[in-house]
Image (cartoon, rainbow over all chains, first blue to last red; front, side, top):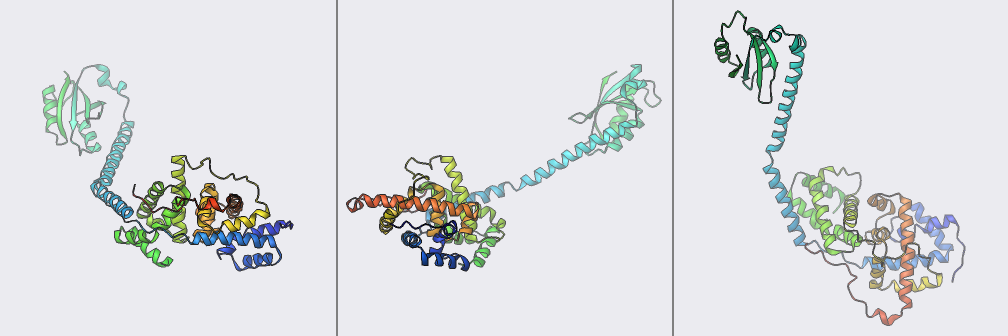
Length: 204
Length: 203
């Protein structure tokens, strides 16, 4: 039995012994370990033990690459490639969805800004009088808001609400107007506008 | 294969070159499987981890920037996947693992431990009984021959932690091997070969 006392520094150096055995220490660390080994029987015993472990470890052969393992991996790789090819349209769809959402938000914001210059619906003399035709108008998908505003102004109409999720806009037109003697004239005029796809009279 | 060639291989894999992936697999699947097996001590789980690691190489080869050796990077990925598998399985801390607080083997037993360490099956037996954190450090040092700073990178721990884990692992190994020595040479003849590393199995 060896009861030699070793310092903390020696403990730190002894902790490097495993990597002295596998030959990966820096030259300074290696020199420190060798200096310790020269004077410490305990360190020499530890070294002998670690070398025995290392020798047995090195005798263990690395398992060869598994053909089955590669086939399995290859199958996964190929299936992923197939899925990627199948999903080629998804990024495009996502981009289209984003573009639509952006356009929608743009329309809503523009709608809000356009109406800022007008008065509240409740303040409209047309609505207040109660003497108006109420029509539902469906515009083409590619209609620009500015062209709709122009059309509404030409018809001297008031937007009651819309556009709905279906694209419907409800317009109120004063019966006492100089453009349309009757509701039929109003509907005919609206139907003739290129940006209008459908018109219906909701309130006579 | 040197690191420059490995980088070329990874560059080709990043471009989805399947043949490059096969060469990489043939080169490194043994390393990955063995480390996974040493960590998990379970052949099917190790094969599963190896598949996951190689799949990650296929998917993320472009993310390898060459700041570490390919082997270190691969072992690090394997470590992470294996630890995930351990957590999933929650069966790594078996009751037969050696106690990390075990006392240091008396010097008189160290010679016995050295003698017993000459027998591969005893060494394997005692290595298997180490806790995962000790077993990994011992494996990476003596089986893979990695310097301790590389081991720290693989395990994502400080250098000092690697040394401490090795110190504990070494003491536990000494105790285990010295204990086997005390059991006598007769019982050594009865050891089965179950402690050897198994070949990868298809799952």
